[in-house]
Image (cartoon, rainbow, N blue to C red; front, side):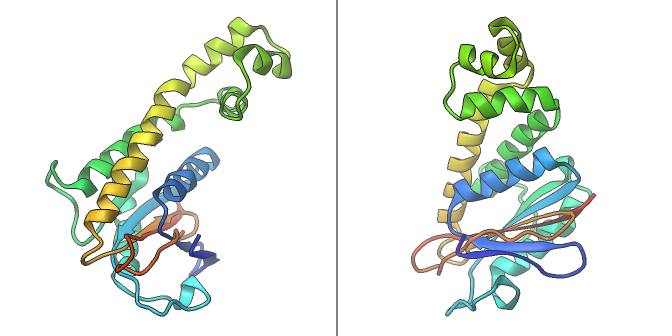
Length: 206
């Protein structure tokens, strides 16, 4: 994170990032926890950056606030904003939001058993080793991974990361990026627009 997470107002938290992988990771974590609305905003960040995200300013933070508000009624309680709502399917922001919505929907359907086997597989364990660790048969582990859409989510998260990177790059000339998620507003990391796109994340409890 360029600026780490801080509680901003009420039940909101916020951070700033220039790494689309960090944005995707935050969304994954908040989806697993449950009860968070998530907004991703793209835009410039005023420099020099302050020591904390609460003092930072710029279009990225305005976009993040817009995204958090939009997430209240958005599908999956997730929204990506650069200026106004993305409406053009050719817009990288629209495509990034769409990919994140699909992957979030798949993850929200996972049971805790599904998350446990996915954690082990994502850590590099084989299906057989994961089964042994969980005290179940390899067949049962495989079935849990399938029900958890392990393969689909992995590919979807990579796609979302790449599309978000494209959206952040497209925004560089005028914007950087921000993310918001709830019970608190969350802001991801960001960097100066002259060197790359930023994303800020924020959110609040549903």
